Length: 102
Image (cartoon, rainbow, N blue to C red; front, side, top):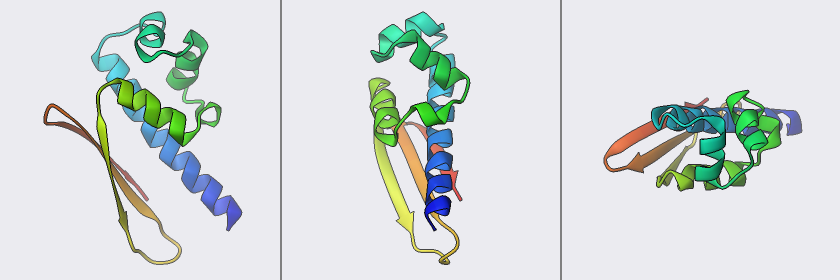
């Protein structure tokens, strides 16, 4: 059970990292610019760009996403015991990024 939860945590972080990378790309920020904008070091941005999710907590990724001005809505759905689904919607100025984690 602990291994499954760890895998679910990694999957959540992978979705969040993907959203952050999309936002960085949309703003056309290079790594030093992204680091300054987000208030983190350039090596942290390198970790994001390289998908090194183990370097981040969910809290840290939420903080980074909030730097882009997004608010978060989490929806938890009761599902079969062996399956977890969480939807995350990031809203800013009527633009939405949505992730579905299975």
